[in-house]
Image (cartoon, rainbow, N blue to C red; front, top):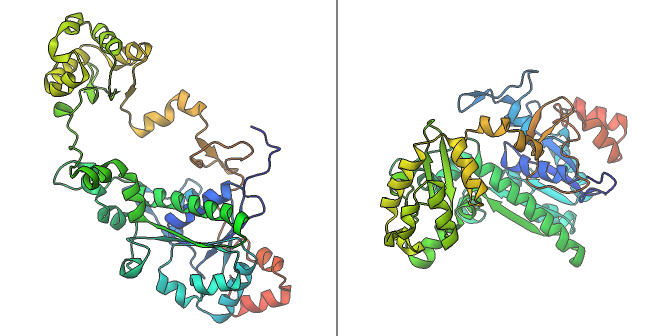
Length: 403
């Protein structure tokens, strides 16, 4: 990595008025890219994520007592606390926005109105401002003002049924809708900054949990809207394509085949791998169309073969042939894999906490410079940069406008 390259967003200032995961994660992506991200928290309490003790049965407290969710999505930021219910607090926000490049939020529109932080208000103060808004069930009209979070956004998007493949919806843990839409929001903000270089003006950009999860289901949506069909629920015993399927091996472990279409040479190679050369001359499986039409029979043949040897044998043999195959693993196995570790997908903060870094590799961008900030750590510094005197800051603190 060339550490001499400037960070892509060096010199960009972001005011981060966000909560929980979606908005904070967007701010963290911008911070990872070098932006100066100033996180504004609630007076006296801070972000809700600081108080979360457990999630899906797992502790949300690190060994050193820190709030894990807060730490996961707020590294590389500065943190201040302002009471935006008070006019003096709103005046401070306006001062910050006047010198900022991006205002990032996922608060409800009615809350932003109460805080004098609507798009119209802030963009009038700073015409070069990129106002980036994350939403829940929508971005306009009635949907924009409905309180939402990852669970309800995932439910409203149809993904709970897409993921289950049957009439019993499932909720995959991990805040998938939050993480995806937060990443999308950061992408939109960067795109708007790039266009500002050409136009000289900022703009309003937005996305939502719903929009992100529909994007995530791109192929599913396209099938419904263009050919009026839904993608068939996945069942390893009755997959539509025997080579886009999962198989259990003799050691109980599973593997995945990923061959959408096969050449004649591919098919012959696979027949040799499973020691079934007789299949090469089987008219049912001679072409891709036949292998689709007779998928169930082929699944039975492959299942029997896979069950005869351990997974490691099949992974090695199929990989040598150049055909796509992968182990079906639990997340703990993935993180323990030396090859995955060599990819440097995880980053380590100065305190030793390890997280997934931003989902791309870019020269000159260190994965993590700082841990997530303690509550209101940078209030005095940021307000001093705004031109306030120590006496003015003390008065604001005495009047509980800042913390």
